[in-house]
Length: 141
Image (cartoon, rainbow, N blue to C red; front, side, top):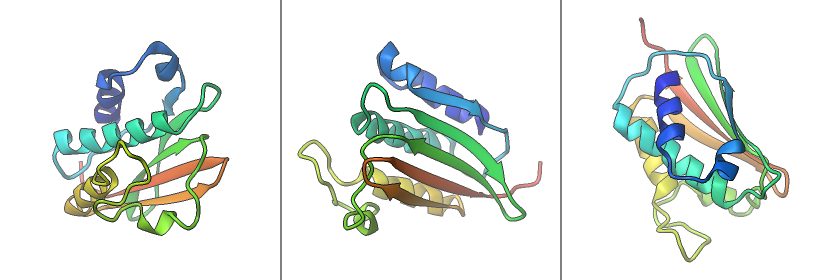
């Protein structure tokens, strides 16, 4: 997972100011089930959204943790957050609050994570943070 995330961050088109917002130092490595390319597109989508909704002083922090059943990736930004009335809808197909989006990005992320026998969820506090949690089924090394 560490290689996949590092590669996604390195390859995503962004300027140096945007790149400086991203902290991936808290990543622990683990193996996952699924296609690397599909998962990279999940991370591209999360990066795209985080960069769109964060300002100059905000941060994007990506780290991992694990428990008995799952390895987890946490993807947090300190941007404008998601209103609680919108939050239940963000993974639905074609749901968007911008004129630039198709409403398929987070739905795609949900589909990919489900296909990998995992899950993606979101917690947000308006004007404080957005935190996506990606849960991966543990695999034997």
